[in-house]
Image 1 (cartoon, rainbow over the protein chains, first blue to last red):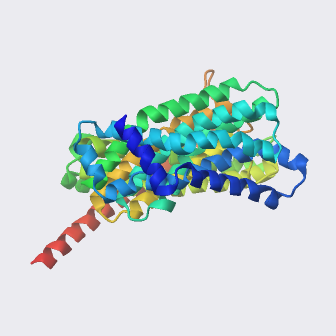
Image 2 (tube, helix red, strand yellow; image 1 turned 90 degrees about the horizontal axis):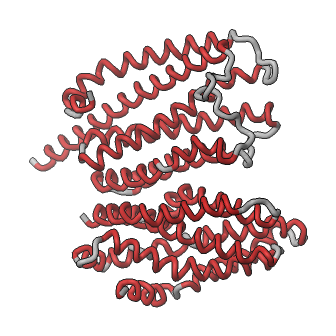
Image 3 (cartoon, rainbow over the protein chains, first blue to last red; image 1 turned 60 degrees about the vertical axis):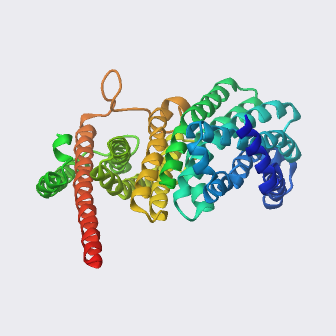
Amino acid sequence: MVLLRRELALAWARGGGPLLALGFFAAAVVMLPLSLGPEPARLARVAAGAAWVLLALASLLSLDRMFEPDFEDGALDLLSLGPLPLEAVAAVKCLAQWLVTGAPLALAAPIGAIALGAKPAAAPIIAAAAALGGLAFAFLGGAGAALALASRRGGLLIAVIVLPLLTPPVIFGGAAIDNFQNGLPWLTPFSLLAAYALAAAALTPFAMAGACRNAAS
Amino acid sequence: MFAALANPLRFMAFSRWAAPILGLAALLLTGAGLTLGLSAPPDYQQGDTVWIMFVHVPAAWAAMLAYGCLGGASFISLVFRHALADQAAKAAAPLGAAFTGLALVTGSLWGRPMWGAWWVWGDARLVSVLVLFLLFLAYLALRASIDDEAKAARAGEILALIGLINLPIIHFSVEWWNTLHQGESILRPGGPALAPVYLLPLLLTGAGYSFAFGALWLARTRAEVWRRRATALALQAALR
């Protein structure tokens, strides 16, 4: 609990917390009509899906700050010697990452989608899918960030590692939102998304702890 | 058998003969399969493009086999800390990327006349093979970006095991999404749906590709063992 509070405080102090991801998301939503053309009919068709994929990209932004500063200043070594197993530390870090970027983005996603022309009735499902998807993004992204610790060129490498792993949640979430808008059964892809997010949350802490120990050794 | 081969000396003695033999078997089997396949009559629906199947489907099989080997070797290396397993994993990754690329390219060449498009995003299997390709690239990028050999090995193992979750998704995606791609036609209840004229050459080329992967894998692992030995010798010489 103390660790969670520390992570949240650090997230605000180090990079302005959710502002960076939200700013990127807003800017990207503005760029989309500029590149696709302003016709409402065309935008409305891609609105929800575009908001969804921009969300995935926005959640990649702060990943390289997840482990790197603690690794640099030795805090990660201290944490690994502490009473909490490194797996739990990694899970808490991901949870903090989700609270700081995933949750605000989940609130912003329906706004972005509606601004692009999605039906307002789809707002709850977009927010719910974004919240669940954000959980998967945070944990898988954390695994990528921890793996990239051992190398000296974080940012882009993390994106290359993480993006292929993000395809299943992007597919499931996109299908859930799309089916909901077209009146098709959306619960199946939504449950698959939830299953994927929870499995990621359960399994990736072990990978992250292993990767952190490897980088520190 | 694996326990015996874990000894690097015994592995080198074994692979010295096994690699060329596997390679020869691969050449013979692929040659026989392609000869039989190309003399098979054109399909009543697909016409001559059915022949692409004999290079496309085995490449996809070999790609999945390569990822399975990469994952398996990574697991052995992670759990038992065996140096040879890591060398094997490192050697398997570029091969897997090559076979995956071959499957994607030939599939695209087949899709153009049959589906009328080089690439169809609605098909889940296409997309997941592309993801497999990206996973191989991610593995290669991660290993290449870490200078320390031991750290690169551990990080690669962890990534390979995370990616292993993707393999069942590839296989079952056909049933989950039920899309444009052919359903399972070889391993299915009620026997293969493929006519024997096509099935036999396909199985032959499939075995040939797998043997080719095995031969190249052994050769690359041998090269990796030699490379590390050379590095160690160079270090020794420099220290003296």
